[in-house]
Amino acid sequence: MSQPLKVAVAGLGTVGSGTVGLLEANAALLERRAGRTIVVSAVADLDRRDRGFSVDGYAWYEDAVAMAKEADVDVVVELIGGSEGAARAVCEAAIAAGRHVVTANKALIAHHGMELAIAAEAAGVTLAYEAAVGGGIPIIKGLREGLVGNNHRRIYGILNGTCNYILTTMQASGREFGEVLAEAQALGYAEADPSFDVDGIDTAHKLAILCTVAFGCTLDFDSIHVEGIRHVSSVDIAFAEELGYRIKLLGIAALTDNGVERRVHPCMVPLSAPIAHVEGVFNAVVADGDFVDRVVMEGRGAGERPTASAVVADIVDIARGQRVPVFAVPASRLEKLPAAAMSGHRGAYYVRLMVLDRPGVFADVAGVLRDHHVSMEAVLQRARAPDEPVPVVMTTHDTEEAAMVGSLEEIAAMAACVEPPRMIRIEPF
Ligand SMILES: NC(=O)c1ccc[n+]([C@@H]2O[C@H](COP(=O)([O-])OP(=O)(O)OC[C@H]3O[C@@H](n4cnc5c(N)ncnc54)[C@H](OP(=O)(O)O)[C@@H]3O)[C@@H](O)[C@H]2O)c1
Picture (cartoon, rainbow, N blue to C red):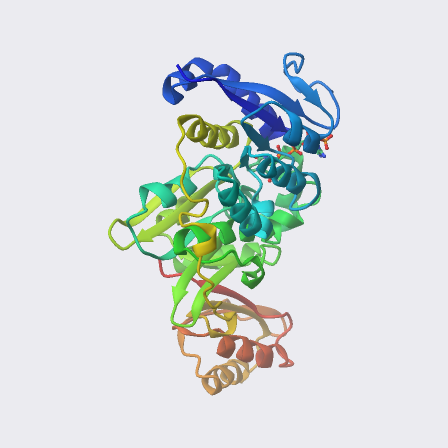
């Protein structure tokens, strides 16, 4: 039997504790599958407070970077979080010391994955990050290994469980965003500061990574168009249902004639699409390979146990001696593809106006859309109520984003339009 694989864990919070717990609970199974024992040798955190397990048997460090440099280990598992500071320093120090690195840190990989991958490949060590996208869903391995024979032109998914929980609860209960967010915070599904989740940034971190693995292009977080879910209202959710759609926050990456489109925003997805039925805190990723066709992977996108499952999968790969390029092709050979501007995006749109129901208003709206070459597909108008604002909902045929945005700017300036128009992109999955 080979030598044991010695592991150091930096950060003993939710995922760190779960990872140590899984490595201990399933030690015999992992030994059979990896062909060698996997032992936690060292751990680091800011203090020794009770984390539900004893740290007495491990070399203890309060300086995680010192652990990454000095501990007698083969693998450093970074579970501190954040794109800068200790998390980044731990990974850099571990690679420089010739140790493999496993991380669940999407922010770190999205912002510094290129430098880290180049350093890891030069040092001949693994940089693995399965848990960074989709929590327990093995989407990185799925794309990089299982679907390696396919060209992908599009990949998309529900990548943030907090947002999906909020949207599905709004849909089921008819309640508004703020109320459901407060409930999600009370239940521990949303952070006290929810902006990373609800403003789409966390989804964008994961999309940046997926896009690179799927298309072999360089990481480009800054080119992602990001909108969150704060403006989604229960009125739009109800109209979506009536029109045969669900509203989901999606991350979508696609190769288009204008370059790589990378976008995160609420979408209307048809009820016939599998992703419309992914509920609560679950995540799902959909890949369309040219040979395999559509592959849908759904599962828990966060949480102690599902995320530990993904972290341990990476550790077992290292124990088995399995090495693959960090992003499916060596980092130095990733292509710098042009980013497609959002203004050139083509698609169908849902638009909701709140207008005073006066004669001629709708003719004026239709005139603006005509002038911008936006063609309407359907119109829904609620009961007439003189001098009360009423919702007018329209869906359009495929049109260019710039034309849609230009028309809505003009419509918003009309005296009869009492609220900013709401626009949600319709995705024809
Ligand atoms: N939670 C999930 O479900 C989930 C899912 C997928 C990916 N992830 C990723 O996994 C990583 C860890 O997330 P988490 O939820 O486990 O976070 P967490 O519960 O906040 O755990 C982080 C731990 O690191 C400790 N820490 C902070 N600074 C440190 C330092 N300089 N040196 C050593 N330890 C330090 C923290 O201590 P204090 O508490 O004292 O600050 C805490 O115990 C993040 O990158 C996150 O994005 C999490």
